[in-house]
Image 1 (tube, rainbow, N blue to C red):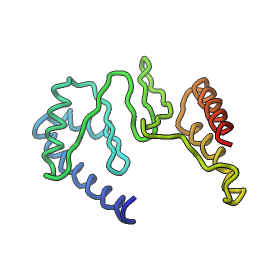
Image 2 (image 1 turned 180 degrees about the vertical axis):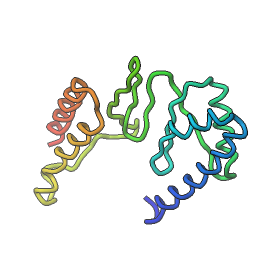
Image 3 (image 1 turned 120 degrees about the vertical axis):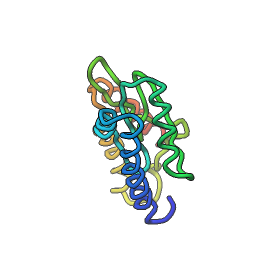
Length: 160
């Protein structure tokens, strides 16, 4: 969506703000927190993810500091001790490990191209394959993958 260079602008802008934040984080929270922040900060374009073990107050202070980096860019925070959505993944903390599941936004209608459409056959055939491959790529647990592939099969069969 938008211009062809929008993703490049987003990457450059957030990258610049990251560099700015490293200096401020060290000043405000100290060198140890800065190192933890850098090692746990993950980003795709303008969507950021960080795992933390600090207090809620530290998270609020971090959000406030990030929001002051640029007058027009505001960082929002979604926190949970056991699970969070990030992009189309659902990240779940289990004991000392992490599992991933598929995440659908509430606005996802799960409607796909009808097989009776006048699109080329190879296009129509690739849709179920691509959707299943997406599940395989994102979902970490075999039982969850099997459940979602059965749901996908039923969904596609209903669409006809």
